[in-house]
Structure formats: structure tokens, C-alpha cells
Length: 91
Image 1 (cartoon, helix red, strand yellow):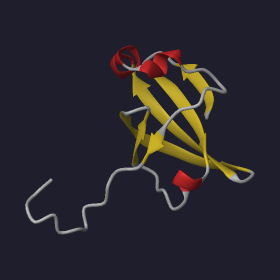
Image 2 (cartoon, rainbow, N blue to C red):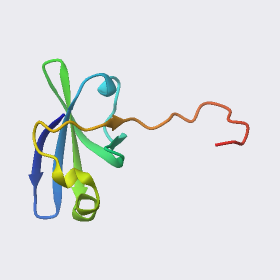
Image 3 (cartoon, rainbow, N blue to C red):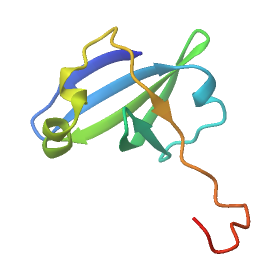
Image 4 (cartoon, rainbow, N blue to C red):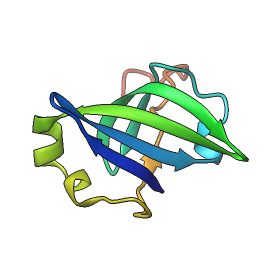
């Protein structure tokens, strides 16, 4: 769920409240938010939730549906696949 959207002069600070997906996540991790891959710049805790903060460039903001998100909006969060499986050259 979107916690906050804060436009700044050079970027948009986008904060998402998460639970299960945030377990074990580290600063600098990539997270797809509604399909847009973003790098997490800050993690904080609020009760049983983690607040994941991302800084989006204006270009990403304009080209994604995240421009329509506001506090309380639901978003889809996905962590990247881990490349530890032998795919036998097929991906």
C-alpha cells in the first residue's frame, strides 16, 4: 500500500508499506512496484510493517501508472528472481 508520495525538485519520493515481501530485504534491493523496477533507498519500521522508500526520476514517474498512486492506493510488489538455479541455458 502506498504510504506517501512526495515530489521534490529532482525526483519523487515514493514510500510503500509492506509486510511479507519486506522480510530480509536489504537497502539497495530492487523491487518491482506495479511492474516498474525501483531501487530501495531507505527502510524503516512502523509496527509490524516495513516502509520501503524509493526515489523516482520524473521520466519513470511520467511513463508509469505510479503517477496516479496516492496514499492508500494498493500496488503490486515483486522481488527479483534469484539466479541460483541451473536453467540449462533456457531462460
